[in-house]
Image 1 (cartoon, rainbow, N blue to C red):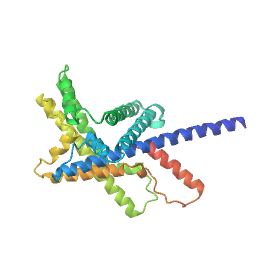
Image 2 (cartoon, rainbow, N blue to C red):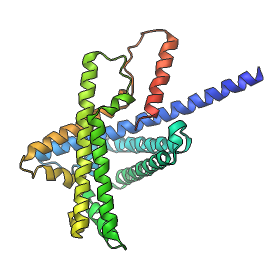
Image 3 (tube, helix red, strand yellow):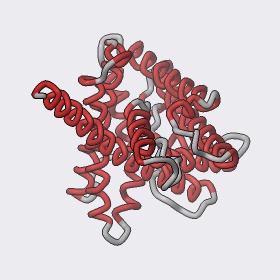
Image 4 (cartoon, rainbow, N blue to C red):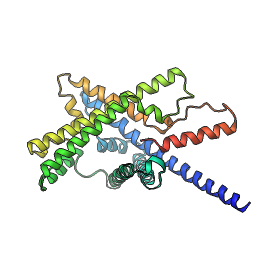
Length: 298
């Protein structure tokens, strides 16, 4: 009986741990989704010539700060990004199965560091009112510093190629609808599944295109040994409006980023089952499945 009680407590502790990290993941996805939606909206304003600030994370934070209770909303984003960093870090340390591979742990660890950095910069913005250089200036400063290193040109070029590759992978995975494997679609109607699929594909491809374009600019900066060629998210998005297609390409990419932000909401993590459907035990089983899907979400 003692052994059974201990096992029950162990299962309860693991379940509580999983639920905590699942909640952290949801908070992080909400924060990230909000930023992507705002970047998309700012990009549309730029495309149609109605003004707008920087179409990047800093510009999104500025828009939030202008709203009623903006300061509180900024700190809510800080909590969300901190939760995302916690979730990524926990996956790097605690994940089982395939996630125990060294490459997967390093990838999750890198993501944890990235979201910790985003959390810190957001907190600084909320605390001091957004002072500091723009994302474009930061990209050029980092590129200039890297080019001064031994083999800096090679390192910057390799970094550009890496970002291009990441963008390509993101776009291809979205086009192949790989994200559907991470969603609970069994309870969706055919029409709902079609809508979710279309939103996910459009948003994921747009996100990949932005990554790849930013990587191209970094690669050009390396080839020309000119840090001014490097561009942040804002300048990368603005460059789409300078193509022969004109501002319509920027509008298309902006809409895609908005779709990605909407689909990035944790509600898309598998909560497709209608309330009251099935027994209580089956509902608990589906809830556990949803948590596991969100836990495994890339």
